[in-house]
Amino acid sequence: MGFGDLKSPAGLKVLNGFLSERSYIEGFVPSQADVAVFEAISSPPPADLCHALRWYNHIRSYQNQKGSLPGVKKPLGQYGPAGVADATTGPAPAADDEDDDDDDIDLFGSDDEDADAARLKEQRVAEYAAKKLQIGCVVEDDKVGTDILEDQITAFEDFVQSMDVAAFNKI
Image (cartoon, rainbow, N blue to C red; front, top):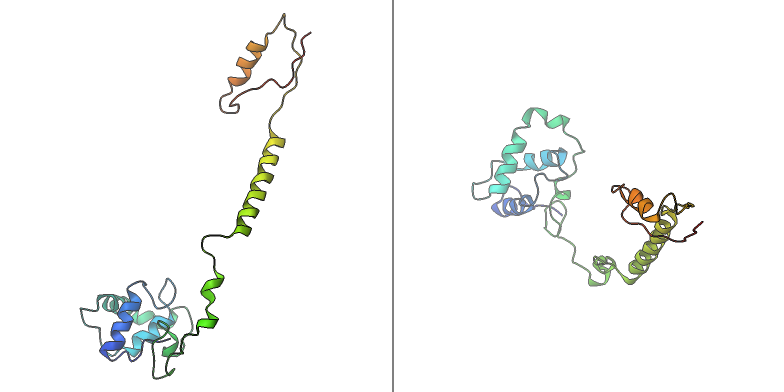
């Protein structure tokens, strides 16, 4: 990790690339990491390194508040992108193909997750079926017809979508 020599154009170019996707060295607010890197730069970056210059001017605006920014200052070599050699940390370690942890992450799901999702869906459908509103009633056909009763129940459009007669007893 590290930016390399931040007093050299190459180090500033690495810093500019790093800041092209970030606002700060670490996190989402100015911190002691920004102060450490800021103090390692001797002068404002050139205008062609727009991301580094933007960051430099922003951190410079915190000049009177640098001590109150959150975080703990670490050595300069511990900040920045991985794989850049720095005089304080030495050369970057070579990547080891056998220890590649990227294979452990399955971004698109696996068969195990599909089975779990199907089981969860079946469980939720069963819970929903158990919670359905069933009403039992006895209707005297001469006084109230089933059509009138159905119209009265489906009039509650916010609560009832449809109605089925499960059992019919006529007296």
